[in-house]
Image 1 (cartoon, rainbow, N blue to C red):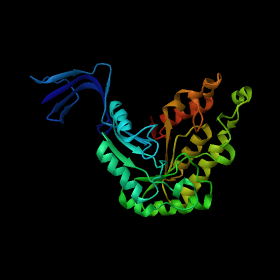
Image 2: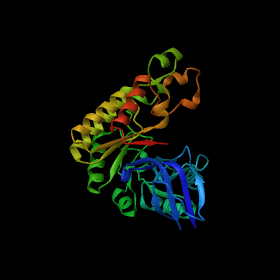
Image 3: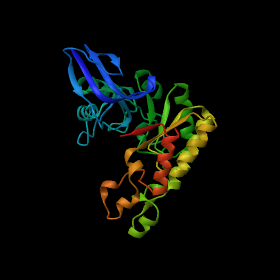
Image 4: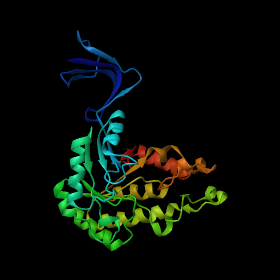
Length: 304
């Protein structure tokens, strides 16, 4: 079978391509990339106005299986990924039960083999039950295929516990993905703390709660040598902290969500719950800082 994808804008980072051209596929393999192609008998797909890219990777998803299938499951989540051009997803550990031991990880791997339609990598938890008190079975999880560790949805409040977790993860060659919000400051809030939350009479989650958490864990990364990845960064100060840490050679990375790049807390003025999230969407100043961080390479990825 021969197929030509014509007139698309080809984005190919490996070869630094960003150009309009054709892609020729024969028997499921790309044989030509770029330029104008004419292959007799080939099926032609006109991609005018579209981007043609390698399969995308989403490094932060919640397939919710096991235990929360009413929200999502492996089959529907990977179907949605494939429909959006994403061919590899990395799913978080905050399932029920938590992916904190090899038995649960193996069970999820089996479900992926049965129902997944794209490649799925699995993150193990940092702590048992996401409680921040006992380390998960990190060695076994790593040996069984966990690609990273995270208590996403929960901040590891105990600094000494986080240090030990990072020391262990570093020895295993794995990163820790950090939900960076100091919940002693943020647990009672529902939106960004600021002028709009005060006007609405809604308890807020202050940006400084994120900034403190990011600062602490960047310092722990510097101490332990473990790669720290800051999930869904949302504040201008946090972007500044990560930028400075990278300049110092600290082994860190970060991501931003599409909604934090687009929306601000203005969208909650009418108590619109669709814009409630954690961390919250913040001010225009924060939004611009996120965009600038993406443009200058401080922010490494966009999560969908």
